[in-house]
Image (cartoon, rainbow, N blue to C red; front, side, top):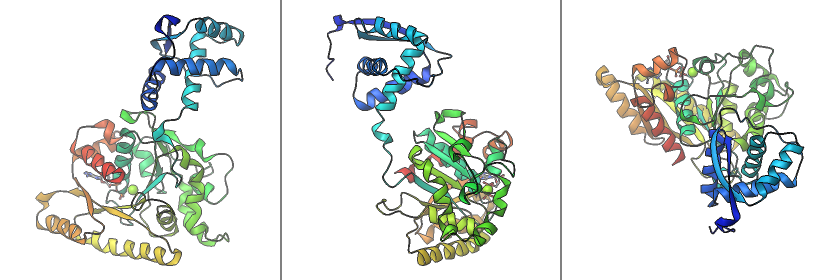
Length: 384
Ligand SMILES: Nc1ncnc2c1ncn2[C@@H]1O[C@H](COP(=O)(O)OP(=O)(O)O)[C@@H](O)[C@H]1O
Ligand SMILES: [Mg+2]
């Protein structure tokens, strides 16, 4: 893009800005093919033109940022900051924030069909729903996707493993939003997971013990179709903010599971296989029986509600070929099913358990281990 001003018409401006804001500006300007100094100029002009009170931008921990503004604009900005009673750095930071907010990333346009929804389900416990849901969500966030991880198991393993407290039984919770018993915004319940390379893109909706009551309450509710639609209705306000919503399902085949299955259906206008269910399984015989029951429940939903549910694949977890014939032959049986395919085989390794013990996300605890790599493979299969 050609600069609209000769360099001589510009003056150098140096300010202290937080690294994150500078990074966001750099990435956004590149995405939109705009020169950084033109973006800042536009932001400053828009900020000056509209003196409505803006939220303060956190400028702590800033470092030097240099750009070139058209001659004179710097002085005008300084005057405005004075009259608005703001430090100059804050004024410039707000101007850049304003430009970012009014120039969204082309990658960030909300999809007409909402966020992509991936649920990890299997009524059998201990197969790796929680660990693969968490790892996949971390890999999605690492790859640049805004990702919401939902702890939908009343036991709250995911919440605790990431080191967060569960909500108390009387606190606002996902279940209360689903049942229409909560006031305020569900958004306020989300907690950011800051470690690792997730870059402010990974959030957790912690569990609450009240989810134990959810099945019974859904069963007795008089609201039409609430058993199927409750999760979707509760999460709808969040869908514009996220590219992916990943649900760690409870180990049951009750109504909670039904509402999760319905939530991951292929919506009208949505590309097939972009939302759906991933099924973590073990390479052993009892896992096959569990799958038959889950399969039947999914097919019942398909028939009863006339919907399409994409079974995205199996994740064969805790695989260890040294366990011999049982392990290898049952891995083969999962592969023979073919549809859905085996999307990944996760080896049994210590890193997963260590991360859980230390209450850290696997991909920040041991980013280069084999399990982390497999989580990235799953994320690529989902996004690809
Ligand atoms: N690939 C793996 N290697 C080693 N341990 C694992 C692996 N996957 C899961 N685990 C451990 O096995 C236990 C059960 O896994 P989890 O993800 O909680 O299963 P689920 O959610 O299906 O009950 C957890 O302690 C978890 O840390
Ligand atoms: Mg679990």
